[in-house]
Image 1 (cartoon, rainbow, N blue to C red):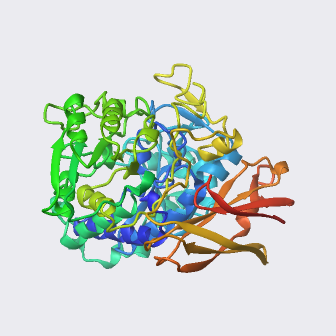
Image 2: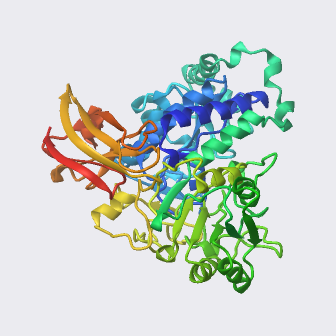
Amino acid sequence: MAASWDADLMYQWGAAMGAEFYVKGANVQLGPGLCLARVPRNGRNFEYLSGEDPFLGYTLVQPVVKGIQSQKVIANAKHYVLNNQETNRGAVSENANERTRFEMYYPVFQGAAEAGVGSFMCSYNKINGVWSCENPITLAQNLKVDLGFAGFVMSDWGATHSTSLMAGLDMEMPSADFMNPAAITAGLSAGNITQAGVDNAVFRILRAMFAVGVMDEPLSAWDWGKLKANVTSEAQAAQARAFSAASTVLLQNSQGLLPLRPHARNRLALLGFASYGAVVHGGGSGSVVPSFIVTPLAGITAAAGPEATIVFDNGTDIARASAVAADADVAIVFVGTLSSEGSDRASLSLDDGCDVDDAGQCLGNNHQQNALVQAVAAAQKNTVVVLSVPGAILMPWSHNVSAILMNFMPGQQAGNAIADVLFGLVNPAAKLPLTMPNIENETQFTPVQWPGLPNPAEPEYANYTEELLVGYRYYDYHNLTFTSGFPFGHGLSYTTFSFSGLSVRASGQALDVTFRVVNSGAVTGQEVAQVYIGFPTSAGEPPKQLKGFVKTAPLAPGASQVVTLTLQPRAFEVWDVAAHAFVPVSGMFSLYVGSSSRDIRLKTTFNK
């Protein structure tokens, strides 16, 4: 959903989830997941909506929280904080300095707090040597004071290590090993727990329940026996289809191969995970068991119409799949990888993605997906690759195929949604919330950074020595070029857009950035216009940072939209450790407007 870059759609998604939770008798949703994608191979990146950018997460989390809580269900922002790897997550200390935490890892959680989120979940890991769920600096001070969070903090399941109520933990989950009457009474007697501390924890829990409306409902509403109810209505399924299509990124489209023409006498070869082995969701506690799945084979067959010929091959025999591709007008190869809570990914290669059985069911690792794509591309010039992946992936074959679509974890309506995009019913407007690298470990993590030391298999600590240079910030700082990968914010359309008329005007301490977006192509479409700024070099900031974006209205060919984005004062501030606050930076700033972090159409400078 983060790939949609669409705040309105994020609200609808949140409300749709909240409505399903309510009908299932649940008054707390353990989500949204928010952590920044610091480690491309993190096993839980697929759960998190920040991508690799704190401002993107800050902006998108707010409508999601409001949508969930509009249904009288308390949202839960997790996992606070620095829960950025699964390798030894229950013991590793994630070590990051104060400036790095406030500029990179806290903003998305601040966005949740500003949206009125009812609860936070503290994480399994330690932070600078202290367990996250008993860390008085990150919980009691940073979260509840500096970020202004007014709700309650619950532990991740089994992440409590002491009766840490005074350090900022309000609720132990799922048991009461430490936060029980005997332990709290003993703490009161010993003087290391105060009655005011107990009252504050209780108040925070009740405050969230009353604020969201949990207490307005009859007791029968919160019946956990409803959990197994299938609450997927036709309307909910239609929403899932729309959300999935709106989050599908068009990475490449040589010679305008896409969209395909429906109801044409096309011979389409569907290869790889196009049948019941389709990758639609990740594993672990973030997995979803759908009541039904529309496979790509089913969705494309329905959309192509009776005139088309659809031939499917699961791709386990590469020579056979290549022959099927050669005999078609267009070959569409469905590839993917699995990812799960509990472990980080073995690599960013598709070949560490999915095991398959004889029928092509995705089970864990098919070590020949890259070879399949290469062979099909050699046999068929009109080759489309659809990537269902949990995050960053390597595409060594990207220059050999005509078109690439990425639908991440596409959900139960995967087949219908991808068909909507392939046949042009939906003109893609999604953008990458993550950098797609050219090679493994392109950001040059050392073992001390990830997975950590002294034993990388079971690290005791991981040091965030890269500080602010995460994702595209690293690529810009080191001036890396893209050969087979794609930059942050990238995403194409079946039409084209031009930008013009950039003006910058002070509005108090804020800055109004105005420009025009014109649909310069032949079909109606939407563009996500992005605004980045560069700080004066004296500030020690990365060269370019996302500070604003907007998805235009649908624009007909030749139509335009004048966009004004207001950059708040925080956009021009950095965290000052001595002041323990964000402070403004003075000097000459650069401002960039474009279609991605590397596709800059307009730029200017201004003094602050």
